[in-house]
Amino acid sequence: MKSKFLFFILLISACNLFAQVQNADSLNNKPKKENFADDWAALTKYQKENELLPLPNRKEKRVVFLGSSIFEFWKQKDPEYFTKNPYLDRGISGQISPQLLIRFRQDVINLKPKVVIILAGSNDIAGNTGHVTIDKIMDNIKSMAELARLHHIKVILCKYLPVYEYPWNKNIKAADIIVNLNEKIAAYAKDRNYTILDYWTPLVDDRKGQRAELTIDGVHPNLAGYKIMEEVTDAAVKKALKSRH
Image 1 (cartoon, helix red, strand yellow):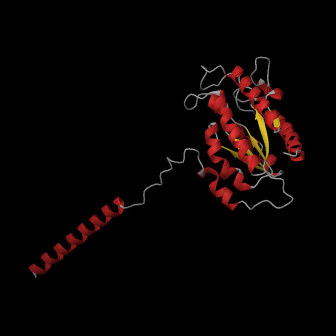
Image 2 (tube, one colour):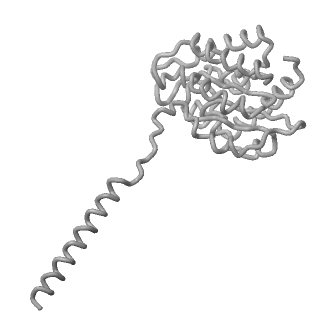
Image 3 (cartoon, rainbow, N blue to C red):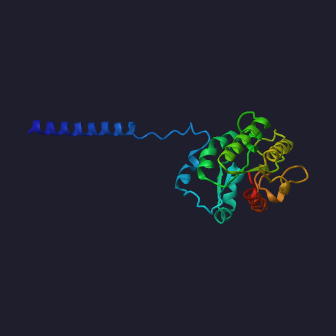
């Protein structure tokens, strides 16, 4: 009887030990969280949405908005603008122009739009990452525009919204730098017969910043600012669709 009891105790101990080993193994072997550190341009943000998106029909005049927070926040502030029009918002907050260039095939070309609106340069100027010159910004804008034309997508290049200073980096004298960038964008667009979309003029105040009643922080528009942008955007889209280039 004593030997049976001892065997029973040993059996329970063995079972407990086995369970502990199993638990330890399950903890050690649990699936690792996928590492997206190599996705510098955040291609994963719109990947699934793009995959579910049907190709445009013959009558659809699809327009892709490619940019950073100005475009991303636009859809949040006025979602109806994008649902009532054949407009696809592909803005990602904080992105600089080389990231937009990397995303260009997935988030523009593959979606088969008639028109792409390219708004780039502000985050580069703000010094979000590294030291970027106006010429380097223009190189990325030119590459995107050339890719679009190669794929028979009409190009709209934007004169950037006015910014007097960036709240997160007040050392940057943004106003005149953005004026300089806009002059180069406008000259390039004229030379290549791209449509220019001027967001700067209708929003600017007397110190080359955004009008206080149209912005939430001097950089991003409020709903009233976006409503003004919608008017000039629709006009530019109509012009681009009529153009031969």
